Length: 572
Image (cartoon, rainbow, N blue to C red; front, side, top):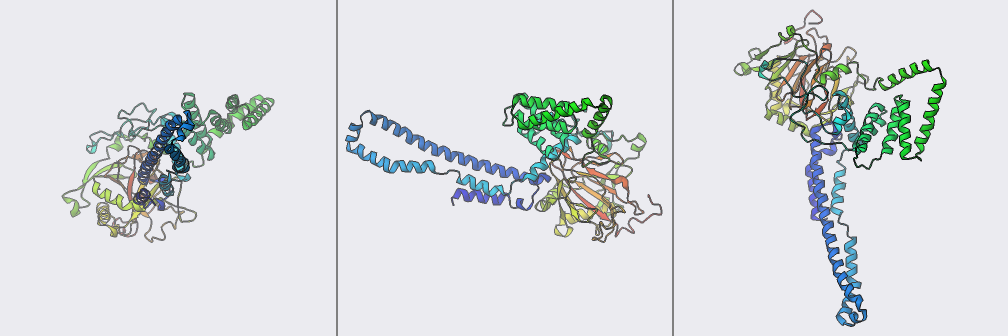
């Protein structure tokens, strides 16, 4: 094994010691950064291979030039040339030995080092699930943030969103609540520009359309195939041809009930490829259907056809949520305006944890984010140094986040939760222990019965759709194994700023809480009576631009009997 190959193997070992154990790259931006280093190493390896091939060709070229001069002279007077004994000897030597050496040089494979490196690293590459997951994430972002295909294709994603739901005064809590520019279509523009801007090629758009097609999502298939077609019409050079695009596009349009457009697209396809077998078959079928419709009762047929088309095109998606529209509006910063009377009841204050010695001289900064349910934000409550330690502890353990399956009672992965998480115990690091005690001191709740600190990193379009943190009455065994009762409250640390998206929203009440590094939000999931507060149903909006790190602590009922006594009223 050559020293170069050994170096590549060592690099792989250093760069990717954990990747093989953590599939699902698309669910964590933090782990996707490892792939950047992997690809960089492959580029270095590829350039070494190119240099070796160039050196090899240079040797062959010099040899060819030398022999070209020699044979040009020899062919002018062959007998005279070989009549010289030295020339005769060298001719025998060249043909017997040197041409064999040249043959070996030509046959020498200079790609061994690169292929070995590529083979080793390929086992750590993202798989089909990652590629499809990343594609679905783009479609999810497109819907949630009302982005058209051209905006995404040109990479014109907004760096930040505007927090439109609160409309608070800028001086409140000594901070500016404006989160920046508007989304496209909201009457604003981003002046600061988009970092690391990237474009989608025709092949990329075609791939997104095919992913949607595979999922029988003909609405997005149409959008992305049309975008691919537009870019081809604009003159973009591509290995994907219009025939392939029109093939998918015409069928997707047909599936949505637009027979006229499907017929028109099919005819365009046949103009480019008259022998296209499937298109010829579709053309005859479409014409047959249209002729059949004309024979039917005109008015009744038109009414039914329009109704069917509308239902099919705008039908209920497989992952439809009743509050989907409200949830997505909140994610875009289009929250419900709080009345001035309610706003006046929201305050900022210094909190000493009920005269806790740790916070008497340096009280925590509190801000009321919402009134019902009461959501409180703590500012500057976790330091950058503590955040880095928590992230370093969590990174090696990150695995696909799971949810409770209400039918089986077991943990399982779900498409509506796209992130990776890890659990940290207080006994394994003093920083985690200190953070746990800080939560106890500021909330007044016992953390000894709480769950471990959960650290989460969101992936491409990472999200957690609307859910409850507490167990409902139809889930009596949700936390039975813990033996600590229901989740009484949630504490959520924001461990990174997020350029765009990633808000925590409460669709039932219209609240939006935007990530801000070093802060934490706290709310009770249960009333003092022990009944669940259904207004705490919340979601983590898809991350549009940036990297979102959070950590949360779920506090349970046991141990809080005297810290938060029960009330006689069910909803207090």
